[in-house]
Figure 1 (cartoon, rainbow, N blue to C red):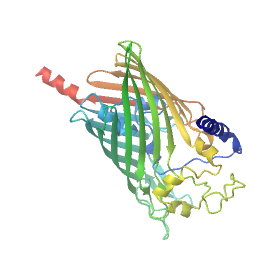
Figure 2: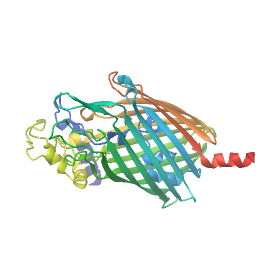
Figure 3: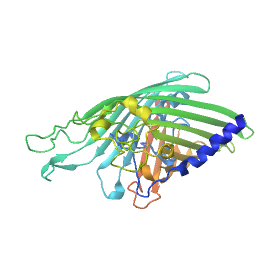
Figure 4: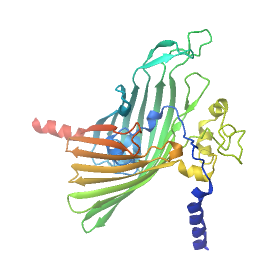
Amino acid sequence: MKKSFLVIVASLLAVMPAVAQFPTDYNNPIITGQPSLSITPDARGAAMGDAGVATNPDMNSQYWNPAKYAFMDMRGGINASYTPWLRKLGVTDIDLAYISGFYKWDDVQAVAMSLTYFSMGEVAMTDQEARLLGQAHPHEFSLDASYSRKLHEYVSMGVALRLIYSDLTNGMKSSTSGDATDYHPAVTAAADVSVYYKQPITLPMGESYVSAGLNLQNLGGKLSYNNVTHNFIPATLRIGAAYELPFDDYNRLQMTVEARKLMVPSKKSRYAPTFDPNDPANATTNQYSTEDYSNLTSVKGIFQSFGDAPFGAAEEFKEVGWGIGAEYSYNRQFFARLGYSHEDFIKGNRRLVQVGAGFHLSIFMLDFAYTIATAPTNPLDQTMRFTLGFDLAGIKDLVNNKK
């Protein structure tokens, strides 16, 4: 009976994507407020296919999975990452900066903080008649703090609280007329809940590790720039696994796979009041009005996001992006990385090959990543990331030795 049930489930999963016939021009990407929260900030995670929820702990764990900090070998550290953004389009003033740091005061507990700042350069603001209103410097940032603790020899849990701020207009109104809309910075708060599992396995050539991670990311409120329209932030479910294999005392290889899904409702939705089940591709009848979509609560949106796609389960599976990555290390000092990040065509079509390298000493770490888009017209092509980190305990020991 059990075997028959498994065969039925496997058969359904195999044919499900073929049940729905998507029109060639159909697309239904999920749009969120402050999308910079979804940009991979660090070079290591980017080079491994935008995956990091289950990989070995590092200083950038605050973004991927705060629970990993409880497994860090070092006592404390701080690092900074820099990403020139959309250079493929010829822009030179859009950048993502990221700073994170952590501290472990014993073997089972850690605290961490991070700051992400996204600058969108200078933008000319105009009204509906194309009259210039002025020059704005839109920017966004998030500030968060986390606490992680080992619950078991192999399991830890972490929670993070995040302040989110977005200013797109610098307070400018929508026009110079008397009925102009007042815009203001959008502010909200969110939280992460994460779990990490890491267990050693003894092999003849050395200690290997199997690990898994889960992070419910950006669970929180919505953003509004005018108190009328309210935008969902990119609440994301990340789940992944990794395996680290030693070849000898010096050479190791870690492989990881990660799935991610935005827990944000689709605007083209089977829950739209005018949804037509006989014509799921109809953008007119199957789309929420701006007002109805704006009035959905964050909690309702999270639960609704798992079953609201117009084409049902076949389209829901397409909302799951994934990444795979590999990291080769020599003596845990020299690193080479390769990854691939995939997003379905109808959900954004971001398909990226990523490569990177790292150089780690006892005091500082330097990592680099480079993005190669599978489509030459993709604006993310040739994106570079740089991360520089410092081991605070190593610096302290160096200073003490010099004394």
